[in-house]
Image (cartoon, rainbow, N blue to C red):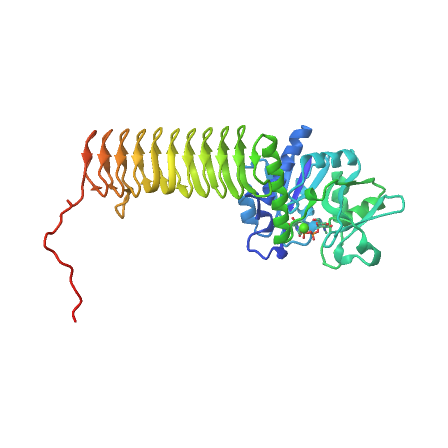
Length: 458
Ligand code: UD1
Ligand code: CA
């Protein structure tokens, strides 16, 4: 099967420097969603897919977004003279013996199941046209049918007159046609219309003229065929996608406090009995094991979280891993490279970066742990700072098991603290600290006898 994806338009109505098809939905470019559906369709039908993306506006950026999809070719459309002209640019890459399916880079929510139905309705020698009922058809091409219900042609909004404007069955843009016919029709397109463009949609009238059967397939839901031309429609497409993702998570057993208030911008996997409160954002790849509880307004980017771990409200975690039965937050931050063991506790205003913390270690309040290797069962006191940066280089800190650091300790890296060591509150330690002992590094407390407070001069 040939699949052509139109992605050369500028998308003026987006009012953006970014090519339209690269605007993201659920954290990935619109175009990537269309490509996924195209690839899934070919897999489902067990046919090879020759996919061509027509690029033009922002071609370099659009091409770059295809990196890693080695099977996808591109065709350049320059200048952009309409959707029919766009498909023409891919003509040389279309295999005549297989039908051609045209998808739009800005119709990103289409599912492989609907596409399969369209192909079936078209059969081997017919045209399949995917249509949809839109209560408000503004902006879309209208499907004109005869009294018997046969599709006659498509009229673009800007070319429509009178009664045509009130037609609510519209063109989704998606069609499939026998390739030799399609090539011939494209060659005959004219741009004598309101937009001065070569419309792909005019191929339908040509098919009718040539007595090629046109199967107009009505898509059951409007969501799938939503065209994204504006920021408002982008937001609609985002909501639809998020609802789909939320439904899938619930099917997998997750409890969502409110399926309308979760945002997944990547791939989230959930074990059994995961609870996700409102306002959480998941980016990149996030894996939540069984029984994980995610409190409200947590942001997790590229994270793995072990079973029964509880994330209390307001946390921001990225590129890190957390073991089982740990407890983090509220207001904690994990920067890239934090590796927390089972039963670790991280409390409010604690930041951990590129550090390992062993089983059961705790940093409950107001601390910074960076570039450190912390053993098991350590207690990082409130206000403890690992001073890992000398202004030029980062240095490592090692804490053995069962180390306790007192409140407001500063550990000046590089430094090693032996197992079982206790560091007195308010200490600044810059030399290695021996195991099993109390080390204090602060001025001794003295009291000045006979001292009197100054008084204000009269
Ligand atoms: C198009 C259809 C309209 C349909 C609607 C559905 C035509 C003439 N009209 O209108 O019937 O209801 O989609 O969403 O086909 N593109 C190119 N090169 C171009 C022009 C466009 O690659 O020269 C690409 C765009 O990047 C976009 C897609 O084709 O992905 C559709 O173009 P757009 O200008 O948005 O068409 P619509 O006005 O929405
Ligand atoms: Ca469009």
